[in-house]
Image 1 (cartoon, rainbow over the protein chains, first blue to last red):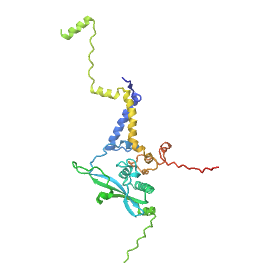
Image 2 (cartoon, rainbow over the protein chains, first blue to last red; image 1 turned 45 degrees about the horizontal axis):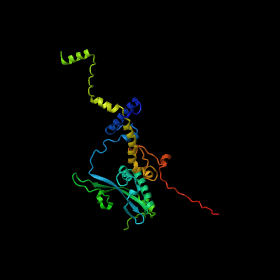
Image 3 (cartoon, one colour; image 1 turned 135 degrees about the vertical axis):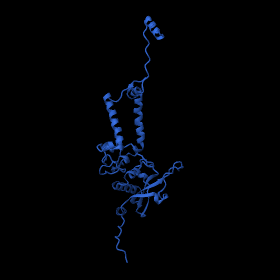
Image 4 (spheres, one colour; image 1 turned 120 degrees about the vertical axis):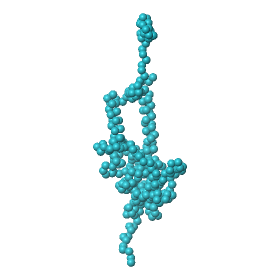
Length: 190
Length: 118
């Protein structure tokens, strides 16, 4: 028979832990029912764990990128996984997460643009700009067999499955590629 | 006189002590309180102290091998967002504390000085 373990701290400390746990659970409840604005943001972040997925989705969303290759002056899909090595092959990688949370946030999209162009230029042919887009891939109805996941190239998806969220401004793209700026368009000739 | 009364009288005559009554079974509230508050075997605590850090290490291993990308300067980090944005409860700037900076895998450049041969 081994000796009994003592609980953490004194009995009053353990009662205080129970109070802390009760406050936390109340915070989780109120974060869904009626968010409390006076709770500090780092604490609120830890309490946002309930009612995360209230609705079923009829499609999955993947985020992809196209790069503008300066040498060929074309946009082509770029595999971003080497530049986001943590959990590169699933949707938990930082590229997917960044676009999932911030696809409406220009500041983040611009930072992602800078990072991706810099990283791609370090390892491959010169790239001047990027396009970030999402793919909506329908989920088959219940009971229907779904083929195992395979990362298909972007060209295998129909245009209606794509939605563009960001494209590098053309002036910045030309600057990165050292291209001549477009001549200003004059009035149409008669 | 009933049977129990006769037995009691006989025990008293022999000078014996009455047998102790069996304790009633604990109620569910007593069981719950015992589960929460009674001392637990120390071996259980030892096992938790060994297994929990190993589980955390296993969970974080895919990030630890890319520490420079995760918390260093080589990976992508969301910039500071203005206002009260629920997606960024706390912004940690690029300037890392020295302990964390040790994890960065900066390339080491070795410069060989020319050696004069006499």
